[in-house]
Length: 68
Image (cartoon, rainbow, N blue to C red; front, side):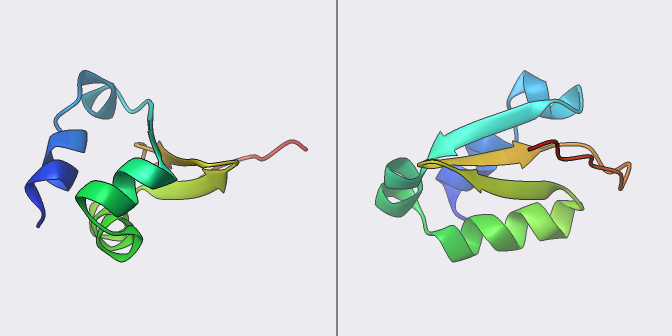
């Protein structure tokens, strides 16, 4: 796993089951969208693309309600 991606998942918000977000530009610069996607799936988390941000829901409960 890319060390930059590993650093994302050491954030305190991850351990609390909250969200983390990273810009598309940062992901493309320091890693790749594919590598981030694989790590999100490996952990059982969920990820959405919102504007120019990847929003990662660090919760494995399996239930997400999206209100648009």
